[in-house]
Amino acid sequence: MAVNYQERPLTIAMVAGETSGDLLGADLMASLRQRYPRARFVGIGGPLMIDLGFHSIVPMERLSVMGLVEVLGRLRELFAIRARIRNYCLINRPDVLIGIDAPDFTLGLEKQVRAAGIPTAHYVSPSVWAWRQGRIHSIARSVDLMLTLFPFEAVFYQEKGVPVRFVGHPLADRIPLEPDQAGARQLLALPEHQPQQRRPIVALLPGSRGGEMGFLGPLFLQAAVEIARQWQQQGGEQPVAPLFLVPCINKARQQQMQELLDASPEVQALNLRLVPGQSREIMAAADLVLLASGTATLEAMLLKRPMVVAYRMTAMSHWLVSRMIKVTHIALPNLLSEEPVVPELIQDDCTPETLAEAAMARLLSDDKVAHEQQVFREIHQRLRRNASERAADAISQLLRGEDLSVPEDD
Image 1 (tube, rainbow, N blue to C red):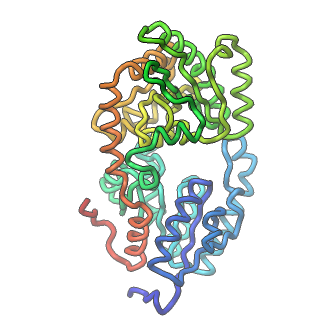
Image 2 (tube, rainbow, N blue to C red):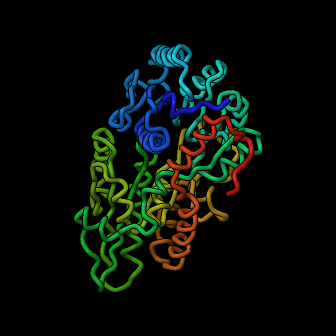
């Protein structure tokens, strides 16, 4: 029997584990509150959610752990936090529990809460479609509804019989279909292009983690040396040395990159700037983005920036991952398009020479760039779905007890 939430205010439990989840959670809260003005929101959330009236039982930063060693060191605390939220749900019986990303923490919690008869939803699918597909059975036991950001994820869950809704990607809602490159350059105080000169701006994003930067940072810098050399040799009227911009997510990454710069006289001779933060503005301003595989590739695509995607890891990690992964591409633009539109240079194929070759192919080919940007626009329009509103609609269906196993007409 459906509950009349106009008569009884409902309680919505939510668990977000990091900054991106806090952003998603805040937007979802705002959309749900339009439908349920008297709703109470409780669980684990960050400052954006708290500003909207969310009651966080535990500070969200206690879940923000990166790296295997760090997780192992905090394992007892993380289990205690999960038990605390589980017990709260079992005693107070919220009307729904929504886990936002952080699958290693939230899916186990959702499974325990769902077993007690409380509806559960999970917002942002883990990459089960790409590797360790056997996890789908545990996910099916954990959630009444999966909310996915990408259409191919929804297809995967439908095939496995898990109720799912493709809601679109919030970034696609936030980033304009036609980004303002000139405005980004002005914001960063970059030199304007002169009609008689071609001076490319290249963004280097070798990853936000120390390990990623350790593997890719030296490769990217040597690729920049090669790009600068080839640009000067390619001719044209008054070629000007490329400008390389490296956004640094924090002081630790900036120091790590500075040490790499200091170790190479060739790199020191580049026209290169380290910039605290502002990765989106830097990508928007660039003529080309050289970046590590990851979510930044989605942002670069939505900004319509030509890109070269790279990744390296230890030989043992690559051996293990290559045997578990189930997809032929790793870059999100390639997974979302009908063709491999951006170059992927992985492991042994990722060298300064191959990176520079792929970069120069885009810097010197307006036709190639135009084609990529057209594909990116088409993908952007498919992902631009007003994600928070669609997610709130699906949660409302779950609360009303509707059959979510029937795919939507999309």
